[in-house]
Length: 181
Image (cartoon, rainbow, N blue to C red; front, side):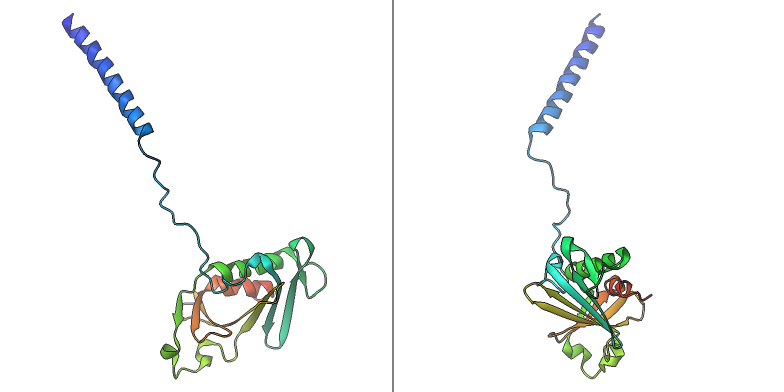
């Protein structure tokens, strides 16, 4: 009989102890953070907000493609009708990548001294992208050759001395916008 009462008492004490631990955990402090850092754009086109861009022009070997943002934020191709969905998506992706994707590396003028720009595919560039917002602010970038692994692309921003090594997907978005493979 004493054993049954002792077991019952231990069960009640264990249940109360467990409930007490749960109450303490529920009321103590706050929930820990997710451990994820807040996103901040780190791209090369930080001065222009992609949503405020009104015109984009891509130039390649004497050819020119112009995209203008029309009513309802739709992209118009060469001032005419709406750009096809894949093209419009590629323009939006290209702008977002220029704004948000950090260069993998920036080669300083001292690092590239004595190396012709042609070695990076920048003399002449493979293609050039000109971005403009409603206030007239402009951003111009020249894209060159892919690096030896084919995963990144050399680029140069007008007004800057360094040569950038950008993730390959940045340039591929602009190639998709102009229908290049």
